[in-house]
Length: 223
Ligand SMILES: C[S@@+](CC[C@H](N)C(=O)[O-])C[C@H]1O[C@@H](n2cnc3c(N)ncnc32)[C@H](O)[C@@H]1O
Image 1 (cartoon, rainbow, N blue to C red):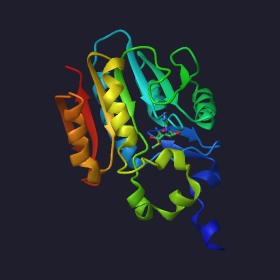
Image 2 (cartoon, rainbow, N blue to C red):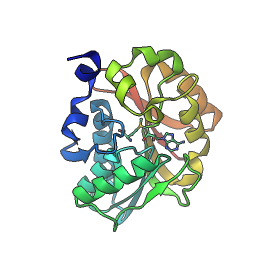
Image 3 (cartoon, protein in one colour):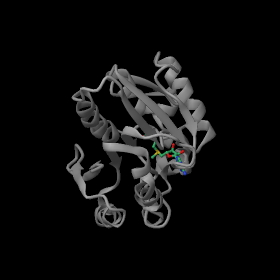
Image 4 (cartoon, rainbow, N blue to C red):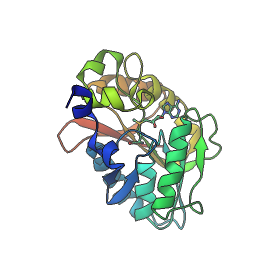
């Protein structure tokens, strides 16, 4: 077996990955859902379940396979969740995953969008896992991710902050009053993240660690 064969992700070989009990089809080769993402999505779902609204509107942005929004749709009955991604292959992938998980159409829309460019409404929750790997840290990620997972899902450009910054700058326009954001990032970005939060006037936020004890996601409330 040569290097390339041995590094080929087993999830792509199998064609799917498990995410919070759901089967996520990977035929279009989106980012493979990660345990650290499942960790914060579980926390977000717990919080969404406490809402006493009849209809809770969510947006899964940078949605890739759709794993985040699919889990929320599957686990919370009164959620309506839209999906946004710039990549046509992801758009196809999300539609496949909605279908195979029996979560089609009625409670969701799939939107091809460059960050918020095609998003038209305000949501109660925005769930985001943007590309956040810095150019200077590419050599540190798993060789199999570098070789086989889509660059568009990983590349956060210069400091890994390009999409995080763009997202935080605009997100207020797409969040209802008291609406919440859950967003993933990497621990080394904490300082830059705090600077961006301050720059764009986000005052009520808290940073949380993942299952490995590393700062991994931020919850922001729109006050
Ligand atoms: C880190 S992946 C997250 C995928 C999935 N949400 C997950 O957690 O496994 C980032 C996703 O952002 C998408 N993306 C990259 N640039 C984008 C842009 N300008 N606007 C919207 N989505 C973008 C990529 O296609 C990719 O699917």
